[in-house]
Length: 286
Ligand code: C2E
Ligand code: MG
Ligand code: MG
Ligand code: MG
Image (cartoon, rainbow, N blue to C red; front, top):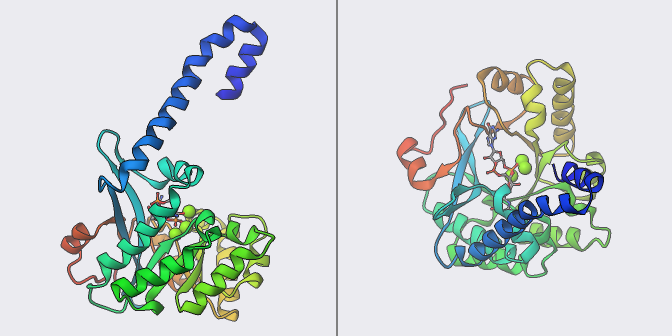
């Protein structure tokens, strides 16, 4: 639409351009508002974590929870990461928000029963921050959360950094004892090469393959290849975005170990999850 506006403006001359300025202005203003609100969001206690269970396909047991950030905005409602993380990245606010997420995810779940992992997403900007390793180890110490049960999820963009600094940071995190997962696997450009660049503990197979798996032989072949590759490289696999039973059954047949998706459970506040699922058990019987 922006292109169209420009096209129309070019073709109709200066007067027409003025017509579109208010709209652009509005977008800029909107972003400025979000930015201003975001600066206050932590102090005003508007950030929350939703947790989404991850189950083992063979047993149906819950093996982990992924922490997913939400902004309970006073006028805009509940915003997802796509609505505000880009602004957080551009403004540098991601550092404090990211540290809050790590600390809060461990605080909220440390008292839960069971041997579950807690998965926390990291953006490229966070990994590029020299203070990340200290922040993670400080959160571990402060909460007494078992280090080996923390899994940090990154995407392959983190490894596109040619200076190798991000890779060093990931290695330092592994050194601490936390696990590293490669998120959204298969959506980028040269995923296989990245598997060699870093010893990931887990591959998360992107929702795009899961969505098509029941009617697309290509997606099936890709998923079963990924699971065999992962096994050979001593990595675990989780499939994301399971929305129906057929997908779940097929993924298990294809050798995927763990699954996550709306079919099993939507991401929700810890207190809601505790009501729905007091035993922290699985919703799905194998
Ligand atoms: P992700 O890490 O790949 O997380 C999975 C996304 O898929 C989540 O979206 C989740 O709500 C959604 N999802 C789960 N099951 C299903 C399903 O069955 N169907 C569909 N259609 N979607 C499903 P969400 O919460 O909007 O998060 C989007 C992305 O934002 C995440 O993708 C992650 O990359 C990023 N993100 C989320 N929380 C954080 C955070 O605390 N810090 C950072 N740096 N990034 C975060
Ligand atoms: Mg993730
Ligand atoms: Mg993902
Ligand atoms: Mg994603």
